[in-house]
Amino acid sequence: MIRVNVFNTSSNLPLLAAMQAGYFESLDLQIELQHTPNSDEQRAGLAAGRFEIAHAAVDNAVALIESGADAVIVCGGDAGLNDFMVRPEIVDFSDLRGKVLAVDAPHTAYALVAKKILKDRGLIEGRDYQVKLAGGTGPRAAAMAGDASLACAMINPPFNFKLRAQGLKSLGSQYDLLGPYQATGAYVMRTWAQANDSLLQRYLTAYIRGQRRVMDRNNESAMRDLLKSNFKLDDQAARDTYEALLTPGSGLVVDAAFSHEGFARVLSIRAEMEGLWGGVSPAPERYLDLSAYGQARARA
Image: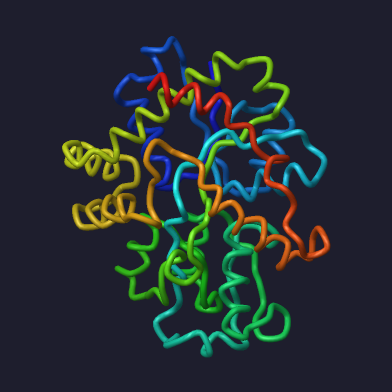
């Protein structure tokens, strides 16, 4: 049994598709899928051995490694499907002065992305806006819909489409506002990966096959049905979510390949926004071991 911990978002459709299609079972693997409420709990859970594999924005792996845990990133997934969502009265970024940014955790991943986007437009945390914790994407979207004090947040599908239906709007996609970014990927503890190389290869083989299944438009109807059943979406939201997943540049990456260009952006944002490493990005090799992925991709 492999325990896999994820955020309950559409970026995990390849994992759901692989489970539905029996790809894991065909490789003699059983999956226990867990949902995390936030990234702090996910990082702590992986380090404590409460599960073996985590899927999330890989900046969470960087943060975990920087805390002293011997974790490692083992594959990519997508380039960041987020929209910069705002309340209806917000017309442009200047309207966010004096407002509140809702985040999952203030020092990782999409919180840093949001802060970077705002900084590039002249808005500085503490001076021009405040930050409030609101949980992972689903809870964060719900909080934003219900709390008028939460003016903006990074929200990914399908929750960005649900917010649009409630009258909120986007000031732009993460990709349009920021450029290439290595978002969702899988990360594990390095000692577990070393002790379970064959198992990890089989897991990644099934995951890659799931990614291919999602990205094959011949399977669009089945994938939209899977989105509807897992996220309680209507036809339009499922259609929009599927299209977002397949959008070149910002959506799923072929074969869950890891973007070195996008990861360079992850590290540079962390260096700039958190003041780490003297403001200079470290060598990426410290955080990566893509050897099992390479074997899995060849096998898939």
